[in-house]
Image (tube, rainbow, N blue to C red; front, side, top):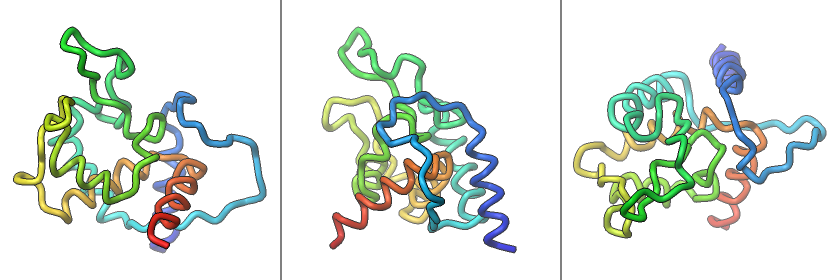
Length: 151
């Protein structure tokens, strides 16, 4: 039942809008089995935390600001999509966590640090939630890159 719930959730999340900025092959291939390392309870917590803390900048569906590729008057870029259509999937889990914890203000960006407001478990839940928005192809590419960094 747990596998079916995850499959259903992933299937439903695949119905969100995507643009083709993610440079992943979209050519149909032999069926690839994608194992995602989160469950419904984690996705539920992560979704609630994302809506409360992240959606104001990254959008309620993790779609990012519509002008995320254009710097503002101060030369800073708006919040990018986290739904698999931008660059977040290029980063390993540790970098995603570090970015959420420390923010990007320290490196010239706009994102505040969330390390003092969110626990490690809450950050993991948020990452799982926005990763659930990623297509199987994007998640598989991320997972492969993430594993290669650990080998």
